[in-house]
Length: 118
Image (cartoon, rainbow, N blue to C red; front, top):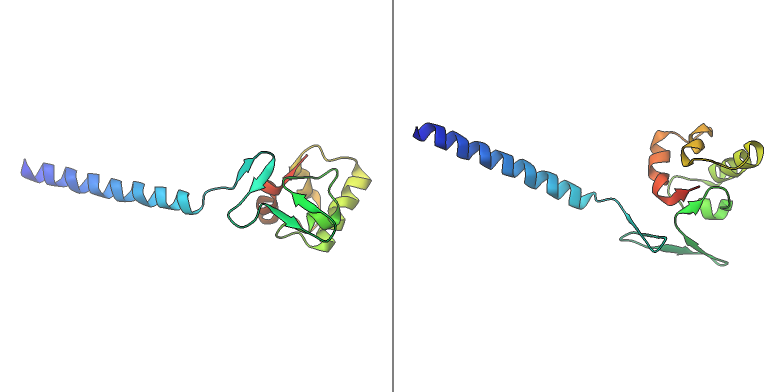
């Protein structure tokens, strides 16, 4: 009987450690949050350039190349391709359409997704 109780306590301890690990992981890798239509991060909410302040999320149908380049993973070439795609195919109806652009794979899409909207 004591052995059963001891095993139960050990199992409860293991489960609690697993839960603590999950809570720690979620806390550390918590997603960024939108508040008042601006993208809030622990680093910076906006990026100031000489001419403008960029607020996130950016609208794919109106964003300039300079604004798109403020997103990690989007180079000048990629930003221009996003705009060219918009000009050749019409307005974006969904953010996932950027994956139709050569050079934008799933990894770049996932990184950029919180910063973009339609």
